[in-house]
Structure formats: structure tokens, C-alpha cells
Length: 336
Image 1 (cartoon, rainbow, N blue to C red):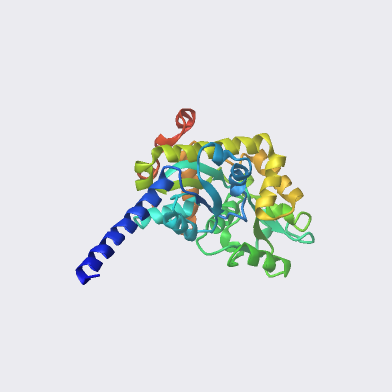
Image 2 (cartoon, rainbow, N blue to C red):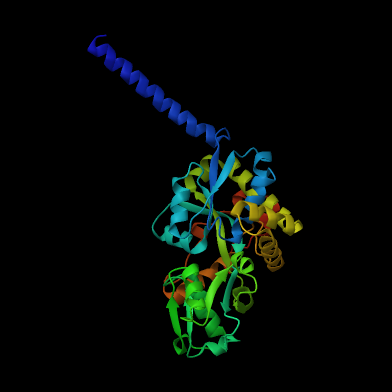
């Protein structure tokens, strides 16, 4: 075959491959290609419960959503996973969303996720620390510097009339290391979240639950890229509606939902059921309506640690137009 003919053939093959690649992406966008959803702390936190339900009960399938799995992660990593994912939608922690927005990433908040009801500070059973005021002169662990766990701890201390400087606040590097520090007497209290609190039932005493000490705060939100929102609004509405249906199922059937979570996370079913019942009672999962007040409460915590300077204009990244009409009506989007 002459050289020119070979070049022409290679060019045609290259164009055909490019065309097929574009078609493959388009197939997913219209529902023909399977992909994963991104959910922060999947496999660890309770925010994954509605997604476990939606997978096991066929709710995504009923909505013609080709979702075959969940991708987890934490902090900024989970948001980067979402941006790199074939389906650029995820339930992301609010601090990561704020940080990404300040970096100029083209993301938009389209629905609420959960409130911060699963954060619990604990002590050992033989500890003399019985109240927050008992922490004066002692040591308390949080995860990492400027984390929301540090904000929760500082705000709770202040609300209880305890100056944070009257005790030693120690970054543990994570929840697991904090529990190790607690069990070895390095600190007097540390953070644990659900469902691990119920997995370790009877091992610790509760010092305080954030939902009892602080105003309600939005912990996670549904996020996508502006491009996906503009190009595939119907697909986005289907995801939000399917998640809402799964949330409704969780509240109506917390025991079954807990068992489905246990299966997805490979944890003790009894512990998962008790955690699901506790979070259902706390109103942990949000149906999707967006309340700016809860987002501002979380941002206030970030200012306590210096992670956020000044105010944050939520109107620049919140878009409730993809919500069902009743949830859109319930959303509180104006200045609060």
C-alpha cells in the first residue's frame, strides 16, 4: 500500500476512533452507559445510606439511571473524584465545596445532603470527665487542623462557657488515630461518627453530640459541574428525585435501610440498624431542599478555625432549579 494511502487510512481510523469515543460519552449522558456516583465517606459514614438503599432496591434502575456503584473518599479527594468521574455528580462535604469554589472550580450546589448529626465526642467509661466543663485543664482530640471537627469542638466549648485555651486541643490526624489516643490515655475525649459509634457500642461514654450543642448545620450537599447541569438537566433531576425517594424509604424503613447499609459496608447489621434508627430520629438525611441558613451555620464554624475568612456568597453556587416543585418551594435561598 502506498505511503499516502496508509496515511489516509490512518487518518480515517483516527477520526472513527474519536467519533466512537465521543459517542461512548454521549451514550452515558443519555442514560446508555453505566457509571458510578461519588459520595463522601462511602463505606464509613451514614450519608451513604440512601445510596445503599437506591442500589439495592432498584431505585436508580427505575429512574433509568445507569448507576452501578459508589465511589468514596474524603475531603478534597472526593470532589476531585467527582470532577474526574464519567458522571460528575456527588454528595460532597460542605467545606470541600467552599474550598473548591474559592479555587475557581466550576461547580454548582443542586440539593441538600445531610445535617451534621453524626459527630459524637466520647470518653472512656472510667473517665472523670462527665460534662464539657470537666475538660478544663485536660486534653481533647479532633481530626486535623482547621477541620470542621476542630470547629465543632471549639464552638461547643465556647457555648458551654469554656475557653478553648483552658485545655489542650490536639490534632489526631483522623478519627481512628483519635480513638487510639483516647484508649491509651493520651487525650480525655475524642471524636467518633456513626455507624462506628454503634459498631463499638458499650465501649465509650458519650460526652456530647454536636446536634445537641450547636445550631443545625449542613454537612454535605449534592454537587455537579456547571457544564453537566446545563447540558443534562433532566439527568440531574432524575438523580435528585431518585435520592429523595431513597431518603423517604430510609425514614419509613430505618431497620431495613440499616441492614442494606450493613451489606454495603460489610459491618455488623445490628449496629447499622441502631445507627440508622438514631440518625432517622435526628433528621439526619435531607430530602433535597436547600436552606441557606444551614450552610451559613457550617461556614461560621469554618471561620472559627480560620479556614474561611469573611463571608461566603452562597448565591453564586446554589441552584435550586433542578429540585421538584415542592422542594424548590421549601428551599430558603434568600439572605438569611
